[in-house]
Amino acid sequence: MDYGFDGIIVYVDEGNEESKWYSVGYKNRENKIPANPNAVFKIASVD
Image 1 (cartoon, rainbow, N blue to C red):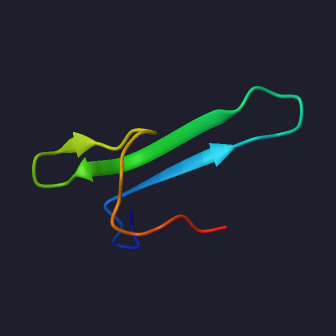
Image 2 (image 1 turned 90 degrees about the vertical axis):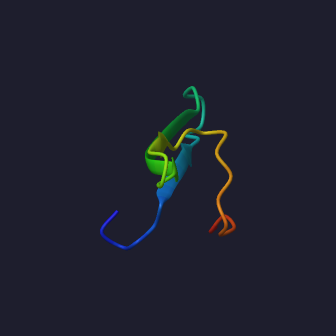
């Protein structure tokens, strides 16, 4: 959040382990709606 992003979603896939999703921040900062793995942001994914 220190970088000015509204929210961040991270997907972790480690071999045979169950995949995990992590999210932080807001999907909608004005209305304080938390980010979730289904949130859509203005910026595309980064590989």
